[in-house]
Length: 214
Image 1: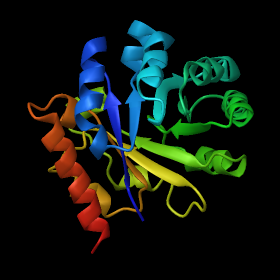
Image 2 (image 1 turned 180 degrees about the vertical axis):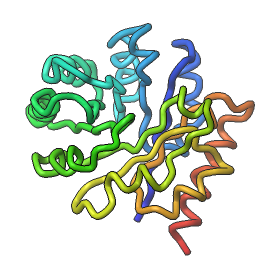
Image 3 (image 1 turned 120 degrees about the vertical axis):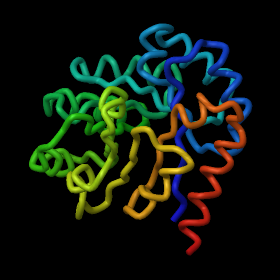
Image 4 (image 1 turned 90 degrees about the vertical axis):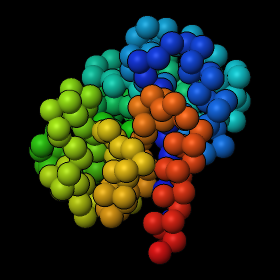
């Protein structure tokens, strides 16, 4: 099974986003327009990335908490292939985002940031959520918290779902995460903050390929 690499662009300027995409696109499968970038530049940057790279899968990290249909449609109409909705959001909001995705033939990722309730995750799977992201946020990373076993317990045993993992993953720590059944790794500053982004992306991709080849 191929593990996809999602490049997360966040906390960088508009022009740098395009420089990075151009530099590393041969080594990544998806590009995420991060929440901070969307808050600064709005849907304009999603549209520009789509126009510049018509075939590039784009994730708009909207972190939807309310107005699920409206916010999802904003991103889909701008050219995003997928949006994120927060797992702690009301079920109604999550269903609204999923309906928008169905209407536009797009996808939704449920971000489990801050969640500890496995019952809620089970409920989300039962209503049709099929992609979950195990996510340790930037502030938690600063306190030394990583996506350890307690996070994987949130999704263990779920059938017919995709699992992404995010949270300070780099070329040195990625092997730790590859021991778990994941489908996608989300890489941010390990690439965007590197002095050699292309080499960093290549190393991470090679690590994913070699691990699954064992």
